[in-house]
Length: 370
Picture 1 (cartoon, one colour):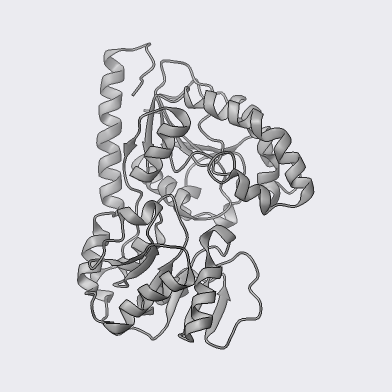
Picture 2 (cartoon, one colour):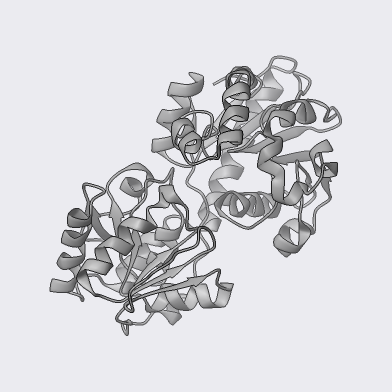
């Protein structure tokens, strides 16, 4: 079976790329299509596949400026000829699902989220952009939304990463979707240790919506040790108890996850793989009680939820942990994270796709619809 995997862009290894990596293992002979590809920043698993790029790759500084070329991506996708494939799987949170395929080829979309900068976070992105970008984006956003809605009807079946995003897909596209949680890389259980450091950890890209500022304000007030690890916005004028490491290596990332007293997750995410990575290292999570965290952070099992994005609410959750640092068992945390393993993801994806292909064969020539 010839399989085409469509991914929005390949310029780093974040949650969406981890899903693609698992799909590559599931379909080792699949071809990959993407707008922009930087092989230096992509895993060996993905690089083993044939990777084809759209016309966006040939534009100036494409691997850095790819988001500026968003208005050109619909036409670039529609130029791809995928008529020789038996199955198409798109990985969507940027433009990926809008390919044109014959009706006899089933198209399954794993939707991480409808494009946030066009829908839920449109006004946030607008406010955080410069005046020229605002002018440019206000002009193109309505047409891009129309195209995004229309392209949703080119998909036969939607899969998504959480019930949180499933509701968003229904609201945005009026389409049903099946939830298959994304894969989490689990370390060996033998590395778990009850010996924790005395610091709290914020891990992830330092951007405004992830609310690193909330963590900084809370720890500036409390004086407790905080480590911030992740590339992104520059952080200035930090007190002595807060350390910003910037981008860290994979090995350093694992060390921080294993040694932290708790992971802080103060933003609202579609799903959030980092909290599960922390649990897999025996580390509890303190998370804002909204979005995907509600599906992974179980109070008194895997972490503590705080109800408001305020310093006082976050501090209250930290004080709960400080009052009883041993309240969470590393083995219990690891067992909880195992429910989201890569093996479980691949098994559920395989079963789902086999079912859809079987149905499709029974009605050859008729596009599948949920």
